[in-house]
Image 1 (cartoon, rainbow, N blue to C red):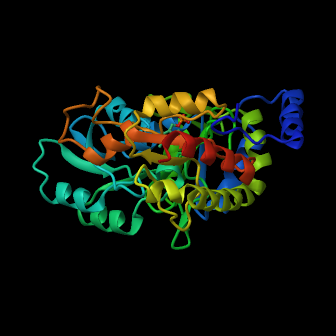
Image 2: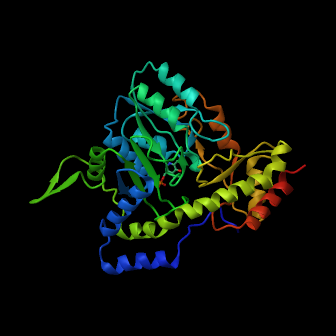
Image 3: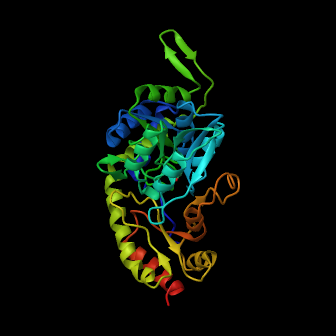
Length: 369
Ligand SMILES: *Cc1c(COP(=O)(O)O)cnc(C)c1O
């Protein structure tokens, strides 16, 4: 079975983890502090705060910005539910805006229209643009609109570590950027996540919020506010550190493979049975998703490909369709369509062009005319 993707863990990474396990320093420690510094240098931001997942990062970002009851936060329709769940968990309301067809990211025209016509009753406090599958949302436009309306910007860069737009990395455009190191992402620590920011006050608040609301003093510890334990472990940080120097190389390979996929699948798009993603510069290609436009139901296509030994899956969810946030806003036809017809194909830097050719041939057998 050619899996959807697979973690890229070297023997050197495994021994780095084993070294930490032997050291006995299992929770927050030197590896965590080094990984924070190295990530900040890689991203080009002032500070990075590690947490235990991408969801924890989103939750801590919203807590640190004091977003809560009476507030509303704009989220794109097509994403992983954690984006909206974090908003709901702090007691605010997620307001769903549709996405664009070729990039699967927030539709900025619809975002601007919503913001300009906002009548409450909640205060529109923030926007969470999602860099879906590693494709950066239109951050120049989103930043302009959000700033004009005094809204905070929390980037959900969970799948976009290493994505770049106009020489600025994903996660460094807003007030806070949130990353995930789940095994489905390009760099993984098992579970894991990080927050990036240029605001040093926000960084120290986020450090406190991931660690029981605690600050160390010369005499001991002070507990300043109710908070979480969302710390990353020292051995997870060692695993992440071992991968970071290789990340840009992996992303380059992913970019080459994504354009190979587009070339291989172009005939199916020309026949009108498949829609391919835009080859956007700076895309980090965490996932390669196509959209079914044939008469075959997607479930059937997924089954046929599975039977032929290719693990394929739906790409992401539609917040307006999944139920818990349905009806909270007007429908999002584009996000709904991507959710119903999207097919994520086997894809990662460890796959060869031959692997992709086999997937493309299987798709052509099933969809081709
Ligand atoms: C993976 C992902 C998350 C959640 O990250 P976890 O580390 O699994 O909690 C949130 N948002 C998006 C867009 C994601 O892809």
